[in-house]
Length: 370
Image (cartoon, rainbow, N blue to C red; front, side, top):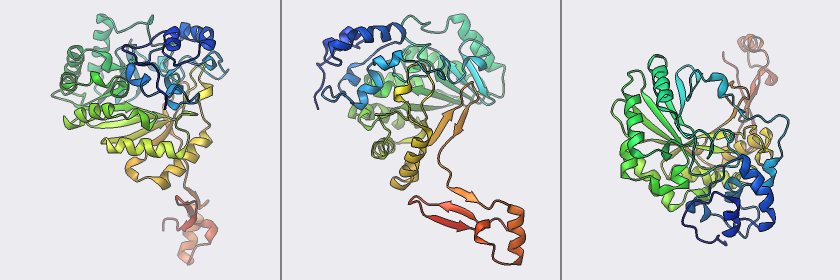
C-alpha cells in the first residue's frame, strides 16, 4: 500500500489533493468544477487510509471527488429523500410520528461523494441554525408530545464543541416526552481525536438515553484510533449502532461486507442499516442495483451471525420514508383458506405449503397455519 504525503490539516481544495499525491494533475480542471458545486474535505485520518497506488481504492472512492459527479441523471434530485416536504420549521424534519430529525449544523469533518444532502452542506452553506431558528425548532419538539426520539444530524453534530453540544443535549432532555436522543456521525472514523472525555461527557445527559449511529462503509475505516474513539463512548454506557451505504466499488462484495459487519460487532457496535444509495445528483457511478443489494444480503445471511446482520433499506424518493428491500425467503401458500381446508382433510398438497429458502439456497416446505 502506497500512502499519500503526510498531511497536517484537512484538505479542502482540489489543488491540495494534487499537491499531496491523492489525484493526478491531469484531472485538476474537472475537480475544480466539482468542488465549485459540492464541498470537499479530506482529513489527515482519512488521507492516511488511501492507497494512492490503487486507482480503484475503496476509501478514495468515498472521499476524493471525481469528474463523474458532473454527470447528473434525470431521476436524480437535490432533495432525494424529501426532507423539505416534512420540514414544518427550519432544522426539523418530522416524517414519522414518534421521531424527528434535528439538523443543527451543515458542516462535516469530511464530505462523502455520495451524500444525499450534498446540495445543503459544506462551506458557503448556512453553517448552523440561528438562535431564533434553534428556539423555534426546540419549541416545535416541546409542543408535540408524540415525539419520543430526536435524531441529531446535519451535517455532523459532533462538529459542535462539547460545550455547545452539552447545552443542546440538556435542552432536549428537559422535554419530558423526549426519551431518546440519537446522534448520527462520521467523526469517530474521520477525525477520531475529537472523541475525548469532554465530548463523551457532553453526550451523556440526565433525563434521556443517548444512542450514537456511526457511519462507516469499509472495514479499513475501523482503524485502531476509530476503535478507541468508539470504545470511549461504549465504555461510558452509550450504545452504538452502525449505518453504511451500499456503494459500487467500495463494499459491493460479500467479503467486504462480512469484514465490515464483523468489525462493527467487535467494536460493540450493532449493525443497523445498510442503505441503498440515494438518487443524489452526480452519484450514479457509486450506486448499485437493488438486485445486487439483495444478492449480497443473501450471501451475508450465510456468512455471519445474526449479530452482524443489518437491515437493507431504501429511502423512497419524495419523502415517503424507509422501506426494507432485502431478499424474501418466503413464498407459496397462495390460498391460505384453501390450504387450511385441505389441512382438515389431511396432509396439504405441496404446492399449497409455504416455501422457505435457507442461506444455502435450498427450498423447504412449511405448512400454513392450521
